[in-house]
Image (cartoon, rainbow, N blue to C red; front, top):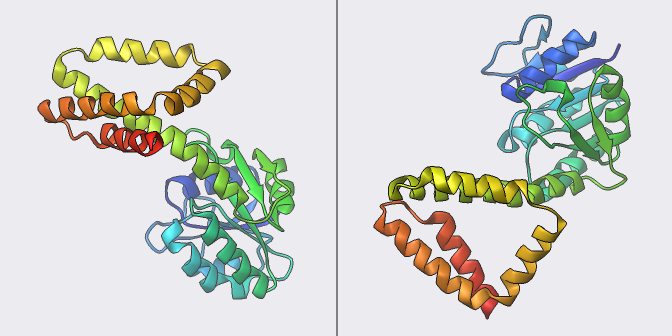
Length: 253
């Protein structure tokens, strides 16, 4: 069984690390703020956790990713792979890759493609970079689902974030619309309408959204201006409505 270091034992790192322990791996965990779960060997630093590990999973935050790498990469052996699972920009992933390469350590950009709670190690992951294949070979037999891309570090992060632009934007619009509908006294009606639209969505829906947005940008910008004004009248900040108006205004030009 492999020796795996998990840096960051919050919601994601703790769940993934615990599943690795249950699968039989030797897991060393380090987090300055969270104690290591049962079955995991607690380390006192990044370097202590990484020393002698076959695979390092950095699951802290994009803000801490560079500091964790710099603190631990020197203790990683030449056969180790440093996998960064943090949600970070493609540019930061490439910077981390360069630091790892300079230390003689293979790097993998790993994007977690779904919420971890309830899934743990089984959460779908997308990996690229020099160490991506090794991530799949180590974690796959332990129960992970890792799709390996033949691409440089940063591409997995890019795909995750492009999806986030769509899905988090959609979620924000739904939340704002329902808040306004609640203030207007018709939340149930709008909720049913949203469910119906999402249930019926398909390839044609996406094409209609894209084509219609470009074709009718000027008219829809005026419509979203009215929508933003209505939300203000309902005392609901029109964050998403105003952003839609601004995008449509830009496209109309």
